[in-house]
Length: 270
Image (cartoon, rainbow, N blue to C red; front, top):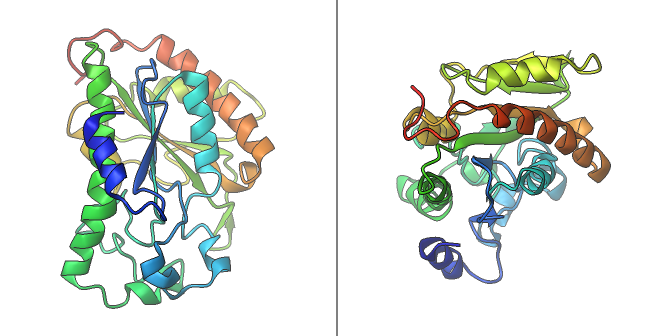
């Protein structure tokens, strides 16, 4: 791990998890995996934001199963993984800081008491402690790959609920994209060749004009190829399911990345 990341982690209190973690930082793949909503942890000083433990196990606090899949993918692909260390209810590290959902007062009709009266100063403190360290860590990992004259792909791993607003979502996995289809198009084709899969194309969320800060910051802004992968939570909320889906996604990504046209490019596609 680089010196800047080590200092950031060392500065965090030993009694609490760090604001981010980097797994397999020396991975050889041309990919940086992200797991923005890897954790449901709320620092002690925020007193669970006024919520009970049961609520903090729900999807509003984190992406259920996403970290388990992302960690396994990091091993299967030999790729670095940067994972968030705190619940998105503390601050959503995948939203612009001026977005109303950056520090949400309510999520999925659940009121968040600890976020009701957050001052601008408190918002800056949360950004400085959780948001910016995470995004600096991503850039550090991308720069290590670029130092090998290789353009890294940025691939966030998320999960989604089986039911939303009474609608049973039929997709098992969703592939999200905006303007760059260099990864999404072949990935969709590869996954849809499996008749057992129902694959969403910009479903259950659209990647067009996204609120995703991670993609905007680390891919759209830089021209790095990207794709966001969403997996339904009920399929990966236990270790066996997470392993199965990591293998399936890992095989698909390995196939697509093997034929990626930018792998030895001197500059990003665009």
